[in-house]
Length: 332
Image (cartoon, helix red, strand yellow):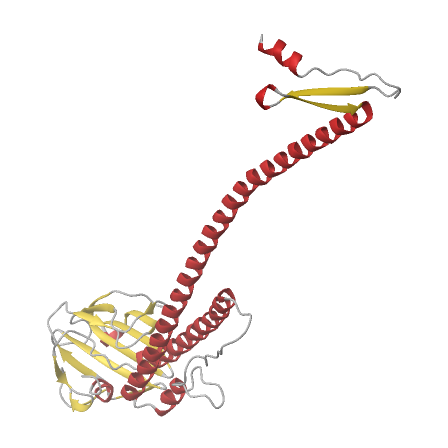
């Protein structure tokens, strides 16, 4: 019913006249029952309809565009937030790396200080000028002292420098410092081991557990037949079966029975030094065997020309007998 009334009140009809172009009359009810009438020709009506359609299209396009923008702005915002979170995480990791580098630098400095103290302690206890010179020259380039810093740090305010570049530079310096420290410690160990080896070839270790010297080196009265006798070593009286130790490191030359010496071992230590052990009850090494200083080579006995349990101990320098006591008294 309402639709029928609207059609009656808004009737559109062609206006009569001489104009051949059709006219459209639009009646619009107004206030107080008055009716307003508008007359529009067909051309203008079509133009108006086209304009309205264009406006609608523009509005639809604008709505679509802003809808697309809104959707993608949400996506971009999420991506940006994810990027910022990732960036903050990376910056935290980078700062942690820089902190670790700083700690490593402090640790390397302490190691360098310990190395310097070790050098001084070894030098003070050595009493060997050549050894002291070798120790002090380790890792020291021309014009550089062994107590100098491992490397000279550099820096400044800089420009366009990222903390990642700083971390990379510190890592390069740390790597160089670690390599240098390893080289220095290896050289220091080599020098100390060399000196220890030289000391290890000196037959100055008391060759058994306890005991007393029952017959010294040199002229004496023969223990069996009396009369004059030259004794080329020391006799150390000690209980039967007591272990006998190598007085220095070296290679066993002889291990077996040797006439009046009974069960006998002779060791070549190097640099012209040798030592010999006689009258043993048993032998614990064989010819050609490498032995360490202090290693058990046999056991005290009374084999060969012997009046009772004891160890006969000799020392040779360049093939000649020397008094073993000169060696032993340095450390015993």
